[in-house]
Length: 272
Image 1 (tube, helix red, strand yellow):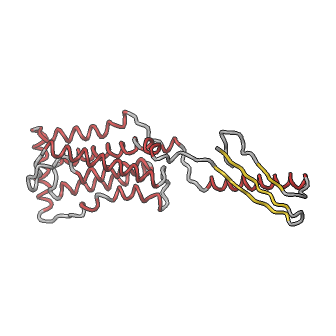
Image 2 (cartoon, one colour):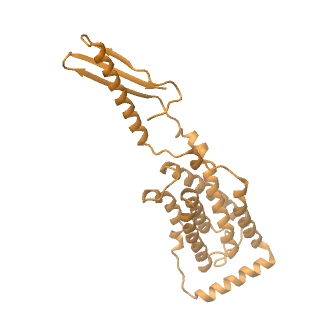
Image 3 (spheres, helix red, strand yellow):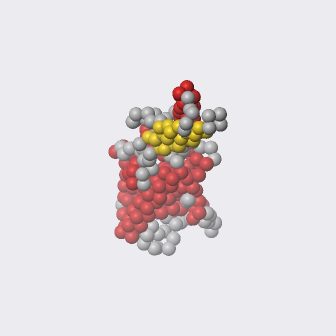
């Protein structure tokens, strides 16, 4: 049954000749019952999620992890001790890898984002409908693209394999960790843990393939997590902007005909 903030719908009946008062009262009761049933079925067909689950409120504590990762990654750009550590890590990976590289990370980076959008269709309990998951992912992606590229071409750290000045932070790692955080926010910590393990494998491959330094993937993880959080922080405003929570007036018209009395009635119910 629907709950109304305003008074109950008003039933207006227009009857033809020969309709007795008892029949009219019975007809009104039947129409009211059918109307209530139709409205309740229409409401139950919608997927409603409590605001306590949908709205991702900003909390300062959520900044700690991404800020720490970004800070550590940034220190590794120029700090002498950290630079020696990342050189040692690169040497170790080169010795371990030899001439063998695994380039699938160019495509696998998008798997966590795809999981965020698609897990709800294969049985996972999503906190938001698909359009809101898509909005959160799109917003996070735009924030990620802007921040990562601005930092890349401002810091201008040389890549380990070819010397191009766009190494910090790792965009592949940022994309994977953005997806992992989106999954965690949407489906809970259990799914999120799996997504984070997958994202960590992408970070591993970026260093393994000699495409990035250790600090690049650390900083990239921070930018990815922060972008995902921004995507959900802005979702309530996007919901208002696109009027996804607004409900217009509900109107129902139910005709009825009585063969015995040759009468016709039209009942109208509306809520505003």
